[in-house]
Length: 150
Image 1: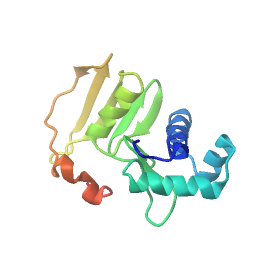
Image 2: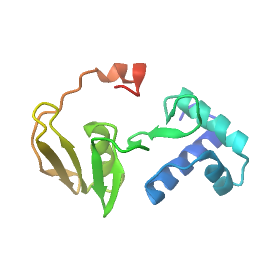
Image 3: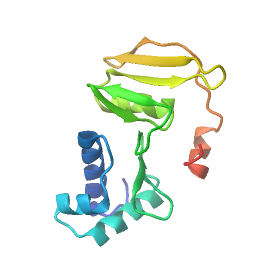
């Protein structure tokens, strides 16, 4: 992040470290404990990170909804990497999780038209199996207009 409080970058790093280690996002008290900080400072950092579009918080809370590409809630895009399952917010995020965690894994979903099961398999950073068409209904430049919907 540019022009950020160095503590914000530390909180961001801890969010991702914890999320990958535990397959779920941390809550503010867990971050505070891990960093030897206080909960209020962590919550302030989380709000700044959300304002900077680094994280998405559940509305009206400091609970992490998305630490892109990771989703804190089950979605239609389960991602299997190294024997663990994460969730992406979309196929793009699912592939981002595979890339972030070493480049080998799979993303499953369903065709929104015919409900056929779909799977994309990536091995060592390359598409190994999967076909289909990816459709983005909203241009990437507008994803943050309503990130919870898009």
